[in-house]
Image (cartoon, rainbow, N blue to C red; front, side, top):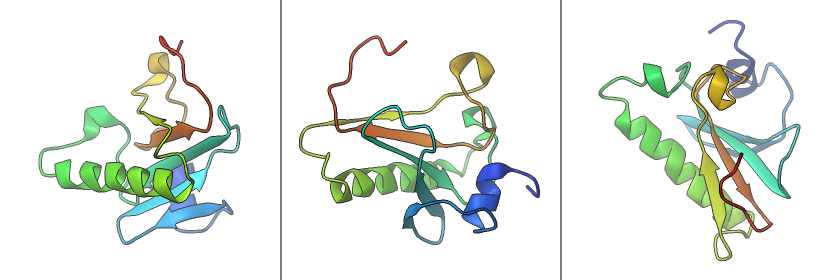
Length: 114
């Protein structure tokens, strides 16, 4: 999408601290971190939310999750633990309507999250 914030970051039209990228996935640190490690992992392809993930895109979601795992390892949080979060639509807390996974770690996580 032309005016999607995360699409612009993926195209490097907006500056962000990229911490992972490949042909289909980009990750960058959150500008308002909720944990010592808080990165967002997104597909380059614009998908507004989990609700718009179509059949045939399961592999792409797998690539996003695999990238999150690789990033957790690179950031040194894979052994102690980390949380992956996907918010879907406004009531769940989604504010940017481009599918993304929050990678959170570096501190003890609590349940329920909020």
